[in-house]
Image (cartoon, rainbow, N blue to C red; front, top):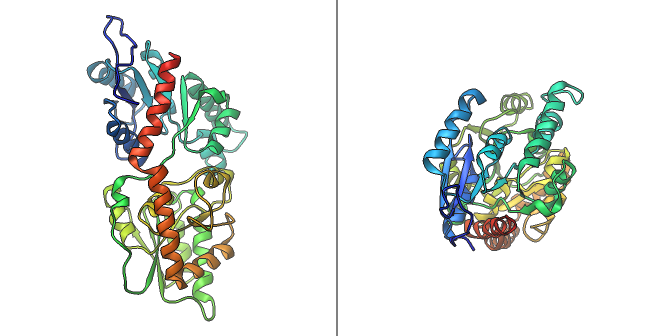
Amino acid sequence: MGGRAHGARSGAGAALSGVCFFGAYDPAYPRNRILREGLRLVGEEVLEARAAQRRAIFRYPALVAAFRGRARGADVLLVPEFRHKDMPLARLLKGRRRLVFDPLVSRHETLVADWRLHAPASAQARWNLALDRWSLGLADLVLCDTWEHGALFERLGVPRARLRRVLVGAEDAFFAVGPPPAEAPVRVLYLGGFLPLHGIATVIEAVAALEHRGGGPPDFRVALAGRGIEWEWARAQAARLGLARIEFPGAVDYADAPRIVEGAHIVLGAFGAGEKAGRVIPHKVYQGLAAGRAVVTGEGAGLREVYEPGVHLLAVQRGDAAALASALALLIADPALRAALGGRGRQRTLEVGSTARVGESLSRALDAARAEG
């Protein structure tokens, strides 16, 4: 486990030990926050060499200075989520350290297939595919959040032997939230960045079906909290449909997320019809389950690696608004079902997705990389 003297040596002969998180990453983002705290909990020394997200001509010198000032003693460099463009510099600086990459996404899949910012045959699409392959190929070890996602990285050139699964999990604050409100109405929560893979259009269509259904479920309210790519469209669509039970609270600070979840009875996951949504288990699913809330999300092979639909949560066909409306109607009308799913889901998440469990999983992966070095 972490915290041992790991044996790699610097050019001056001193032993290296510790994990340096390297790159222009957002230190408030849940993925790297959980990884850093999880490693500390298992006894690893955690260092950080971070710079602002600027163009490489400014970012790279700042990262070099941060690395030299704070992280030269580490025996592992870990480049966190989304920082594909920082991998070449990390490779240049790593020396005898092991270089670990936690991409969390494929840039090509995200920007081309999911967000549809670039046409599949465009130069930008080719560039992002090349950057995926290049950055993944520079790593000694690549992390994946599900094996289903890891299979995509394999298709991008990463040998299975260089892949390790480390679940996303949830921060401990979500396990500590209180019970859901005792009074009506039943509150349904989406909390996220309004990304295409979240299937916001499906959510709004499902809410419309519930509002217009004769003899529908008991009183309920739906909060779509956060801001992002499809936020403006979602507000306009809800207004066009005349939806009275949906609200848009706006941006939420990461630190406030547990409090927001505490006010909900039901938490929504991701419902996008694209392949990416079927590979991942979003933060919001782990967070809702950690809080003991009933969660409904889109079906997918990635989800089934960790959770059993019908036991820990409800899962519906992605992109199917009618199926989502039916699942929500069931949960809204049945507090006993909500409590049963929430209890089993919380226990399962505590077993595999607490900060400590994620830290143990990552530490084992890093020790395997160290042994190979």
